[in-house]
Image 1 (cartoon, rainbow, N blue to C red):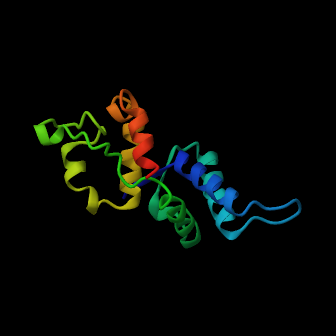
Image 2 (image 1 turned 120 degrees about the vertical axis):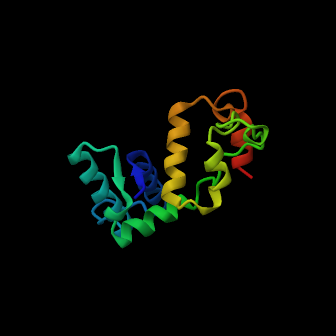
Image 3 (image 1 turned 30 degrees about the vertical axis):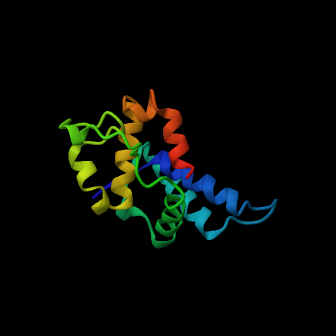
Amino acid sequence: MASIHITDIEDAINHWRGRQAPEAGQSLSPELDALAHIYAVMALEKSQVLDEDRLDSVARAAWLDWYHTTPDTPCIAICSTAQGDAQCKGCGRSFDEVQHWLTLSPVQKRAVWHRIRSEGSAWRFTRYAERAVELASK
């Protein structure tokens, strides 16, 4: 089972806060409430990741709504796996991740995104960072 990183839960919460910011005295929307509950559980457990099967249907739908606002692929159109590299210098994904990207679930894709961001060595995050931002905004 794939895991969701706490930073993705934070980003999903901020996404929903931007869409449905509660006014003073109002309760949270069901989506914000579900995500806040997951965040609280992770904080209490001092966990950075949560198995995706622990999301209830409301939290899952809210997380997926946020997910669909993110770039699908880390690709910056400079693929060194086509040249035989095991790890792409452009995006940081492994050869298998590049080859099977379309079959990965949203949670699996986000796990790859988290890993390559943490490593920060791919050209996407170094010499071509501005190109990645430009491609993501299209």
